Image 1 (cartoon, rainbow, N blue to C red):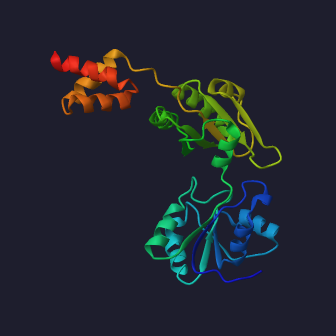
Image 2 (cartoon, rainbow, N blue to C red):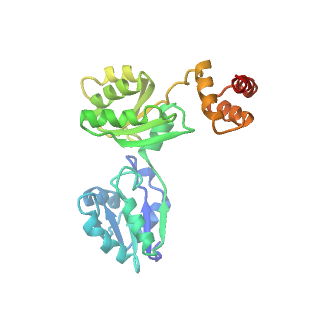
Image 3 (cartoon, helix red, strand yellow):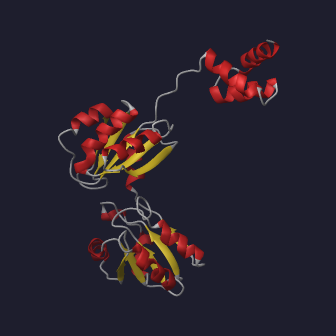
Length: 278
């Protein structure tokens, strides 16, 4: 069924492997958009063959985005422009947010059509905590930059999600094991495809498994949060109380430190009174 879409930008998630995951709403938008902005027209042409139709496509990717974006935004005043990536949800690990930003600044409608995302799908397969997670995209390829990026998030109390490729997987896992310690992790690949797999184990185990090279296909690495921090010592509590007492009354100082260090407030209050008396 053909209908006229309102002008604006439509962000359309497409399958990451299994074409059956294309939602009816996504199909409807793609079949009726005036133009579809694509990473690679050859890839998206395959999606349109699946739909049994053709639509006008225009390239929009890292290398031409700055030049192409103004024209796309101008077209949104009178046309429906759909944005897709080669696979999954646009803007995840790509610079599409700039198109959204400029479309909003120009006063155009922006609509999202949600669907597949490799990072989220891998989280559901990994069996690791999902209440808090941090998406990191691709790690830098150079050794020092990669180590620095890992060090920045080593203390984050959240599950970490990385995208990787087969040739880089071995080096990435080794760097993660060195920078994060021997945490539980998962390597998910070919998600939704015939040979989908999710291998779990410690970072050391996974690093050894893929030491000779990574498998084919797009890969997501999911790493568990750090273990529980060691309980604060009496020295830690005294130092925190001493600092808090320089700016807060005893009761509030005890409450602040109790919350920050996870210690008993009454005991901290008694200790703070001793310190004040001393």
